[in-house]
Length: 191
Image (cartoon, rainbow, N blue to C red):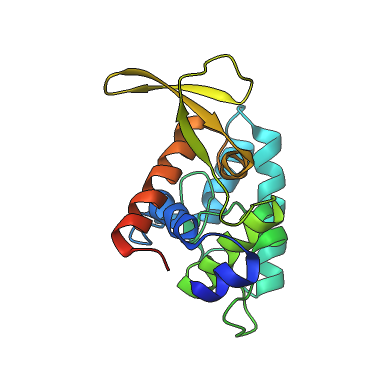
């Protein structure tokens, strides 16, 4: 984790938080055959069929490049794979062989950690910079409104918040990752 953080200039608590949110820290990577999931979504559904056809193509290319039997990788019902739940196109562009064994394997913690850090780095993560902060200013274009336990909350967002949204384009998702990262940092006293 420390090596990935230093190499890619990504705060380590956010790497852990992505894996935490995506797969409950690697405990639930999914059990659906990725080939079956992508084939079904590409050809048996109308919604986002074009997207899933491209992901199926990327999956088959990834399988050939990494010498995977296409029927073996498992993941989510939507074709996301490994501890970081990369779609095949993201795998091909951004997964790294962080343990240097000659194979990119997102089901292995070292490669998954390195790949999440690489993903954030390539999308413009700014090390040790703010992500969001609570605000009373609800007029800024960088302010989001989220429901909280005491009503609406206003949050000033910064570029790192948008980097998290590259992973999943949801304000609630990005806030969950941020809050989990902050809890991890608080509990473990930094890295």
